[in-house]
Length: 511
DNA sequence: CGCCTTTGACCTGCGC
DNA sequence: GCGCAGGTCAAAGGCG
Image 1 (cartoon, rainbow, N blue to C red):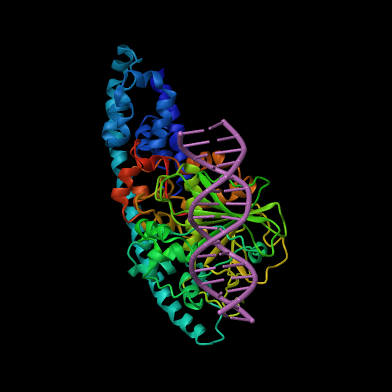
Image 2: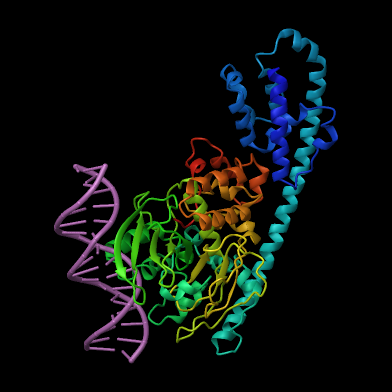
């Protein structure tokens, strides 16, 4: 009985898996009517999560069978064997009766596994090819954007940049390709400037901002100083030194800030990280003070955030993140980090800032296909800033507030799964977060994160659970491999239960 | 005792 | 050069 029961449960899990992975052909439709057992192993091939489910439901069996979890790592053949041997409660008589059929089923399982593996390999190969093509296209786009930006800087009226440019999250990354591992430290921060309180989404590009700000000749090469230039140009030398040591490689994105606007009565948004308040200032034009927080989850963590209530609507909490965590993050923090990283990655490569602070470049998207979050260019902010407006529900109609002075466009976070899976957005010491490695639905995760935060900023626990549900356990191989160039190494780390990645993910920011 | 918050002072960039 | 504003430091005090 246990054996049959397990089969049924496993089959259901596999079903769920198929629902969550539409790309995987539903091979069970062909065989389900005939055999139930074969699905057990096939399901196990792709998801360790479901294996764990089995373990949960059959702890008794597992107690006397050490192979219960090992099947996750082993080949499909082993899984099949494990299943047969993992039912100590089955009587000898039952085994004899099913022995012949079981062997045949086992063979079928093996064959099915081989087919699925080949299919998965093919899918992975296709995905990688597409990813490579996309990367090349983005590079071309970046070059094109550079020329356009030069024209704009030369006084050309072409302030309006192509939609693709702003929609292209990789543009900046591509442009920064020469930078030494600059990707590590995507900056996240909450923009608390009053101007942005009315903005749905603002984006500025680091490059242009640096070039356009007098006295801030921060080139992309001196990334080590960018942290201090951005957050604390007035910082003490000691702090700068430490930052140089810790963040020397994160320069490129250090200029970017990610601002999250969310409705919350709480003084802080629970983002899963530990923060220490190190300062508070009254910002001009806003009766609410601006608080400065520093991540204290690890010594020397460069991540900081500003928290300030919107001057127009005090129920809106504006949190600005900057920097990348240099330590493992809890799931909730990981989700936020990924979200903000993805947002930071959206920074266009060529937005410019006019001398008078007026928005000089912007892109407008008449149709808002992505209602959960939107982006808007803002030249008013001294730093490249992306503002994620979570004050609306995922399906809410954007622009409930009066249109901001700047143009806005939706943030197509889910349009760039490669961003989340790309190592460029992984922290230096944290190869890739489990979420990032879940290449299947990185964008959906972001959506889920933003939606959850929008609905309840303090609901991080549920957020983590939701992410876990959506993403499941890291795929054993192929699934994530398509998302990460460092798939091999990163993945190995991520699936280790004891590994820090198992409980965190990292991205850059968030805090 | 350690950690955190508070808060005034200080530093730096920027505009005039 | 001066003043303003943003950002940070660090001493003091509170809290568990």
